Structures are given as structure tokens and as C-alpha cells.
Image 1 (tube, helix red, strand yellow):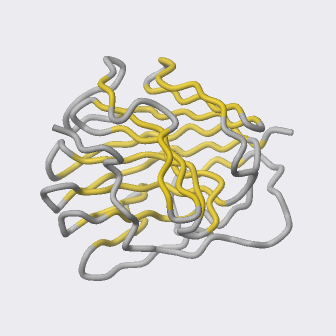
Image 2: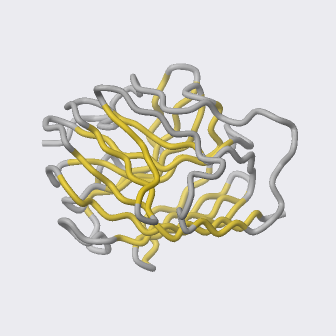
Length: 205
């Protein structure tokens, strides 16, 4: 049974968010041919790397979460990315982090390879659910297959699609801007591996 606030506390920070004053305004398409501005790191618990045209997030140990940070500063945006679990248990989590301020504040839009979804905010040391807690949804393809994740953030309004189907729609005005991250996490078993590809970010006015 899935526990409340299933995303575990982010004990592993892989990268520091960009904190400059400039908000990105140009369309960005990322094929992951090179690391570019992505902030990547590795240790015994987890690693992130750009390899073979993909961004890989590998979680070696149970109970860990890791991400790669884009090095951008955005407020309103449309984002799309292909995410594929390639190893490990289907009882995992992966998705998109936006309006990040390091590991202090961010929104997390998440799915799992066994067909669940969730949206939450982390701020001031506290998790706040913005959707039902790990609810099942038929739009999520289960197993080691690709899911297309899409997100729109416009002011306090957020929409999250999986494979073209709206999964979460919510309103929350706590966080205004910040970096973008792609993440994966392991629960009771390690060796979770996620591959992200074909990222497209369109800043909105």
C-alpha cells in the first residue's frame, strides 16, 4: 500500500539551481546530445549523466531520489518530455520538478511505472499534496515503456498530461519561478533507472 507523501525527502541533491535574475524567454528543445547546461553529479547512492542521446537518472539505493537540473530560470512554461523506465522495480517514481530553488522549494509532478500519479509542493521543509496521494490513472503506460509527460504552468494554474490525457489540474500560488529538473526515485528496492529524451520547453508570457 502506498504511504502518504510517498515521495521521500530529497536526501540526495544532484546540482544547485540557477539563481540569476534573468527569466528564460526562448523556446528550448533538448535532444541530450551533450550535457550542455545540465548540472549532473554522481555518488554511491545515485548518478545522473547524459549518454547515447538521453538523460539517465540511476538510483542505486532504496529510499533515494535524485535529479538533474537544467540550469534555467523560468516562471510560466509548457514542457514536454519522454520518460522511460529502463531498469529496476515498477514500484518507483519519476517526473518533472519546476520552480525549483535548490532543495528548498519546488513543485513535483510525478508518475510511477505501476500506473500511479501525484502532484505536490515542497516548501519550508513541508510537503503539501496538490492532488490525491498516488492515485491510479489509465493514461499511464505500465512497465518498462515510454510515457510522454506534458506540463503547463501559467501563474497559479497547472495542468499535467500523460500520453495526451489530462491527469492533474490544480491551482497553487506559493511558488513563482525557478529552475526545471527531471528526477527519479526508488522506494523499497534500488537500481531504478530512468531515461529522459526529447525535452521541449516553451516559456510563456
